[in-house]
View 1 (cartoon, rainbow, N blue to C red):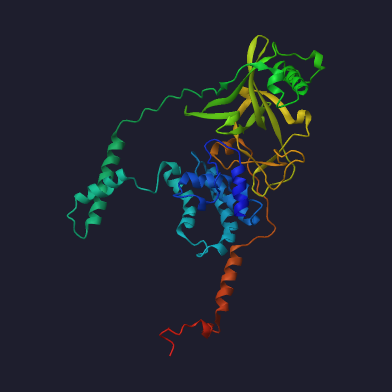
View 2: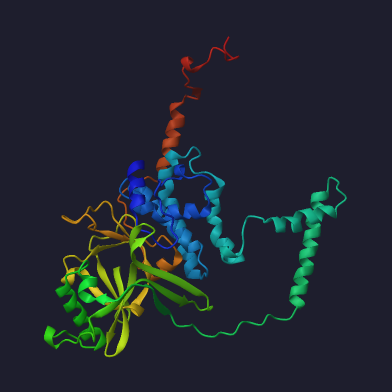
Length: 444
């Protein structure tokens, strides 16, 4: 399993700042593991091992990851805190499977502290606003400076606490009497902008798309797009009656920059790549596209290009659509999709660049196998939203399948009781004399 999971992790496509696991997946391959590396492991854990371990382990980790993302949100309501509590309760219900691998049966303080999150968030706010670790600057204010004001006797700790308490009271009184803070005016949400960069030399349509799609098929796809999307017609007509570009010369681009703004005016920059050489390997990202007024679709970006239509330049994107499957809930709780090789135009579609919402992390479902005669595409893919909060906000919520039977904490308690009973009969320790060392001082 170790070799198989490490091989799978090395085959995953790049995504944003997610770590690439070329030298092994498990923590034993790393030194001085930091929080960011642990988070990157969690982001791909389920997609790498979901068919290699017990399903109860996968479902338990599914609920823990849901708990993590819900608890670390930037804003909270009563409904979101209820989601945090429900995810934690589901994790606790299925986590009994870990007990047989834990020397203490998962009875350690950090697991107990998970139950404090909802109460702490209600009392002190979102958890990104405070920390359980004390910085060096805070240590000087709360420990070193107060220590200098004591008489250095046995009651110095009490004296330090009284000093800090009185100091904080003075600061609170000053804050209450100070002038109210002037709120930043609400300038409104700025519109999302799209910009193509990494320009390549202009070329004809036949030269540019010959290596990616059938040229005749692409011409019909392009003219159909102009007829329906640009002209607004509900259905396509004969090819001879469809509009076409002003010129056959188009310009290809390799990267799209999306600048989106939240309600606070903070810019969130995303990059979508369609490069043949990105740090020594191909990189063609996946993205979410608008489909109509309210829907969206998943696509694998193949190319960005600019063309001229009716005297104006238009920015377009060629991609392959990934359709939702009807296989039911996946064991990982992630949405399953499949490439549209058997659909019209082999799943290819053209979209305006500003209809691209953001990149999304779609990874192979390694248990599904590959298409016959196509070593590059798997039969099924997973929309991995375990990477960040932004992906979870735009993708569909996860659905976790139900297990008909699983290990409960009652089973663990019964097994523990049976193990204790096996070592004791009628109140007498059932220890074999062969287990007693001759060097034991109790042996006469």
